[in-house]
Length: 371
Image 1 (tube, rainbow, N blue to C red):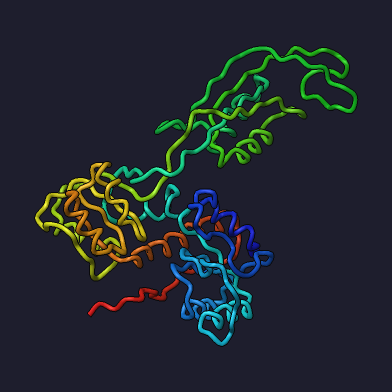
Image 2: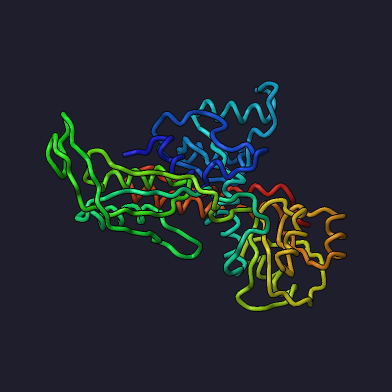
């Protein structure tokens, strides 16, 4: 059984919800249709003509990419230009293109966590917070004999996380009253008679992003026809999500030694370095893409070095004066996402018994040559 395009993208948005993207970013479906069965998915950093040819060769009818193919408004599509020819080739071969960019950077278990892991950064936190997750309080009343079943369903769906604690809830015994009316089939009680039932009130925290999932799990496990429950929006905010990651290294090192860690971990042959190679490095920050402007945020978080791409001359000079070292592995270091997304998506499709295959692009889209 093949997965529909919408199903594949639902899984992708479980990993990287669209609402986490920056306001200026262009994410989501950029070309084609998801109203079809997907035979093969190609995961790519960029979409260029060589990547499109790879997709055609592998029989892919969906490309999930990190960088947008349409970033600025199009005035027209001329098929006698290289870009226009690429769009035409995608359309003629019925290949849809979906973009997951800053939402994939920000999300937990996404781009910057993968890069931090590759560099040996432990317990990484965002360099700069940009999202605080909205929380709700779920309250539901359950008959005593179904208490554990409903509680397990709610917590296993992801509710009840407070900091580094999971499965948090509060449970109170009490009595619920109700009169089943005409047309009802009550689990407890008789039609037309007041029922006083022993029930347990369950309270727990639910992040907004999984609220529907938790409620559906609760309703499925609950024995009542009409479930009494409440959802309250809370002023208390949940976990913070943001750009980059910063944390202590597994082992203290020097800038020169850390350069080799970066080259090996991000699979790059060359980097640019700003700072004294003998400087001790205990805490490191990484930000995929172009993150030079966040060096002050990295300093505020206590980082000795910031690893990020596309550094310019004046940012490098300013960083030296500010007291932080820099390593630039290039923007293309984000290619780490190809294997990671392909692996994650394959796991989801296999779990749900779909035959749709996922491929990590083997095309090197690095535009620079290092001589």
